[in-house]
Image 1 (cartoon, rainbow, N blue to C red):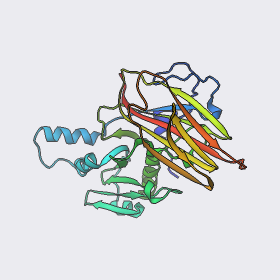
Image 2: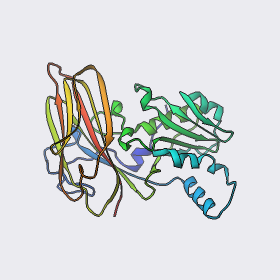
Image 3: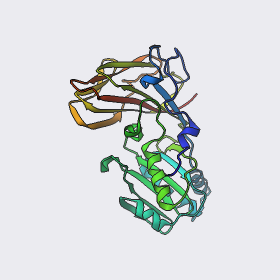
Image 4: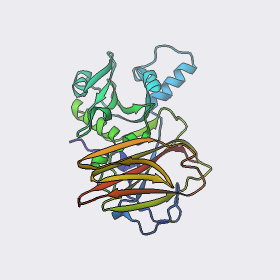
Length: 301
């Protein structure tokens, strides 16, 4: 199995405790919440891939043709939203890459694009993956999909998130083409000026409600606000921001359900505290669980 280091290098993703009265991105007043209850934050740096800079420089100069790294990147910039990428440092056999895809969407002599299936998830969660013969692999969701779709709740233990669906798909592709996955970086093609991605996740393991408070500083430029909600083996669950119900699930015994979406600036205003709550209805079941998260893409002041 390929060893995945990307998120662990960039941040200990959800391993920090939400107990401080003030932290860099947000403030939390519930000092009873700790790591064992799943409260935490993760911040990832967003960095433009080198081939995006190559494209821009070439077009600005009025040049044509371009190098191999350029192939297909215009397509990515038009279609991709939140993305993860790596360069494996060796040439990739595109025939091997094609064997990893569930569906091939586009194919040339230099690169391929297709959808990669994720274990345990339906086809709607497939990740689009771009593979260039020069070693570039990019996993992404489409530009009309919320950033929070990247959260892999099936791999979440409540203590930390060690990967996302995007990185899982890249790792699967690396295994398929016989290349190492050493490092993964992230970028949102819709927000080239954004330099941070933050995930604030929480979990509820017993019947009841858990909350955390969040405040986004006014001097941050927020490009994307989104949410994700998951429950399994429960009599239902709901997620709220202040008094606004963001999502609600009914009974889901012996299976799991998840949903994600975007948030308006009105629902999550900057420079004021908001209470985010998670309710789990366990009923007669003793193994129910519910998770939720707020995901922000922003430019740090």
